Length: 294
Image (cartoon, rainbow, N blue to C red):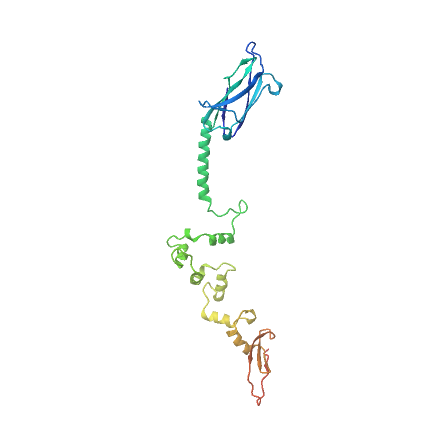
């Protein structure tokens, strides 16, 4: 009987009945029976992975066969197989040569069609994946729109090499440095300062802050910058150099005192020392020992 087409490494179970020749009634398969498997027209018997149970579940004449179709047991894809009784008798009559089951492994037209379809699907999926691997990550939930910050992160993280078409920003940035290399920090800084302010005036942006010094969408004038410097609250300044303009002006505006030949100039809190200097005094003159402007 035809058992069907199976995959390599499958385990299959089937039954066959042995009958007494004189009556046709089921009868026990005896004589140390063995079922072996032949591949195509080979004369080599496969016995590995073959199990025979006679009078299965106590039923006379009912025989069970289990086949483990692994490569280790000698089975191969694309081949036909026949299960045959190679040792055994029924009512003392030899039944050697009786074919009890036939099957194939990955050989049927249906299986080949399934393989063809699976290969086609795998190829198409790989092609789609190759086209979508570089797309931005999907929003956290369906219907969400990525934030401006998320889009900005994606833009800055993108490799410049793929965006250097003629006339593009990518080309301009790429050309800022040597051919094929990223621009230096100095070149990027130059590009930032050369950028027109008008296109970068978003709420809370640096562009908006700079534009606010001049107003009306234009860059601040020299007078406006000078006014801003002169009106600057010194208490908001930190990290100044020892010989800075701020330290020089502190002597004119902040508290200072002179004691034991040392001039001490204070910071804007009139308490913290900004800088000191050794002073030579004329003992015949009346010295000025301090100044504390209100």
